[in-house]
Every structure is written in C-alpha cells, then in structure tokens.
Length: 99
Image (tube, rainbow, N blue to C red):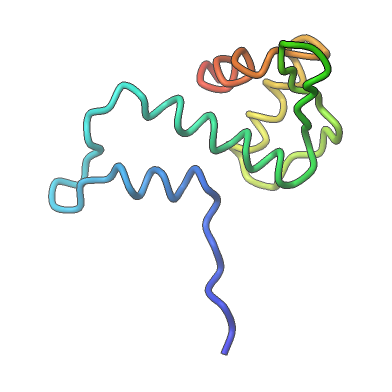
C-alpha cells in the first residue's frame, strides 16, 4: 500500500483555516504570516534557502534559486531572491506576505 501524498505545509494551513460548512476562511489577521512562514519552511526543508545565524540577526540566504515546482512556491522563491542578498529572516516573511 502506498503512503498518501503529503500536501505542502502552506496548503495544510489553508485547510485548517477553512470553514467547511461556509466554504470560507476563518477571519484571522495572522493567516498571511502563517502561510509565509510555511512557504519559507518548505524552501528551507528543500535546501533552497538557509538561515545564517552568524551574528545576532538571522538572515535568509538563497542557496538554490530553482523553484519548488508550484506557482506560489516559485513566486516566494523569486521574492526572496529579489530581496537583498542576505535578508533578515523577519523581513523574508514580510517579503513573502507581500508577494
């Protein structure tokens, strides 16, 4: 028996925020940040970015600019890469939310 295919983390978060009966999302001002963090986590787990903690500021660095193969993941990877060469991790989430 094959294991079920797992969804990307951001899609799982969207499903958790979905109101089944109404077909709408629960009102939450933090949802965009949760989605952005999930997308960055997917990039981190795939080895596309890394977090440099050399000094007190954690910085996100693009290690592999290839997209993950989905449109949203591609937009996130491009947004992170278009930011400064080493973006502060908190700014990386903000950049992701804005894309």
